[in-house]
Length: 239
Image (cartoon, helix red, strand yellow):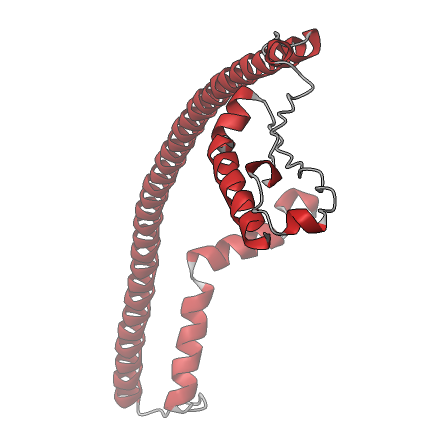
């Protein structure tokens, strides 16, 4: 009897498993099926006379399937969204639109700033080149002016050197002329002393002293020395 009951339970479980819907179908229809296996009531105790009789078919277990429909019907789940959901969706759309406008505005502002800065940089570069050109022109003019002044100064220096050389030549000529006169005078006096037979009474000076005296006389006869002497001397009417 126990083996027959086990076979009946197995046979009851097989159709129950076949009737169970798959997980996707249960999620799609939103219906939860519950299966409950209700065992048959225990048979009354058999009498001694019945122990010898074979068991009847009614002693087999009876399986009852109970399907439990989900609390929420499908119509309620298919209902439209609430006003709060619509507000959230609209706010999201507006936010995206606003972000696009802000991005476009930002790109435009950046482009304007870039163009403005580029124009200013070009203006600064032009100003720099102009100033450099002006400075180079001024430097070139200064160099030309310095070259002109240098040439003028060199010419003036040459003229002064020529004047000094001329004065030196005049002084040398004066000294040489005085020397010639002194020699002629000395020769005449010597001839006179020889003719008269009288010796000169003047003290004889050394050649060095003679040269010094000659230079002093030549210096005293120089034009600038005469001018200084005349300027320092009082006028004739003052006496």
